[in-house]
Length: 390
Image 1: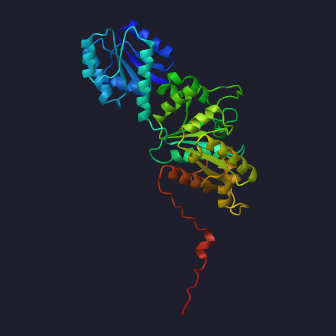
Image 2 (image 1 turned 60 degrees about the vertical axis):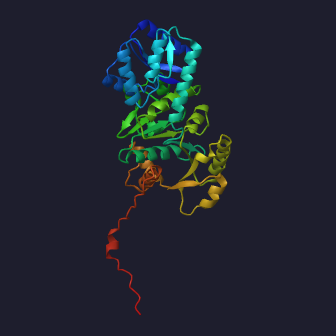
Image 3 (image 1 turned 90 degrees about the horizontal axis):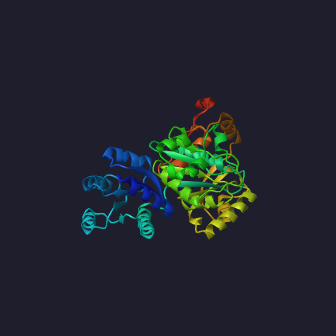
């Protein structure tokens, strides 16, 4: 659903247009001005309301020209539809000379309006990449630590300079990110979806929980009958993509319809598994399902709780799953337990923290950090090995 703005001093025409857009079920009016704004105000409002298209009235040709020029040159070429009160050929000719490609006349024809919205949507789809830095974390089975991996990967990403990150808990019935961080949020991801048509920076600031350059959007209360509108979910993602360099999503693994929508939007799907036969078996089943949706090429394995002397080799695990292992996270129950009790992510100086830091850097195509192991006290007094003499 398109997020559109109406700029129309004629209140009767503006109200009729808003009704027509609502009835089309193809657009949501997120901004309605009954005056022509100046450039500074317009730029601020377009950004805050994440406007995707503008319906601009031709009542004042001079003011129309100023706003249209701004939209073309300063607002990333936001698509514009001119709104005229007549089909006067001279007016239409002037609009064409101004570079306007979409014109609606009052009273509004529903079919022509839908056709115009469809053309605008195609323009936006051609500009917006279907794959960006949206990463999904999918457990092979419950209890493999996917949430811990998602949380600490997101935190590690946010610690990289100039990297704003959003962490979304989309395990709607068993999400624990809020618990792990000891948050007490008033709002949740469901509130974001329900208010998708009215999102702006002020509303968003109330929905997320800030942690430096990481924002957390936790899950809400248990509601087994909850349904998520896919269109509203896409609107939330479109809004978030404007403000974050990376979005990390924690999934339940139950393959709900809304979860599949998020997987389709993901650049990478990290299936988290442990080196145990039940987890690998269920992971292989999910990969077969994703292969049927043409998503398997996006899947990489994060092997959690890896042991130095595993009964299964890396090659055997990859063969069982049918996907490559991106990285192995060593087992350290004590460090994870300590972090949970403190309500904090893993320390970046810890052994596990360093693994997540290098995983995060690899996602942004940055070189890994080489950590020099500190020498223990007695090692300073150990003798260097003697050289062989000839």
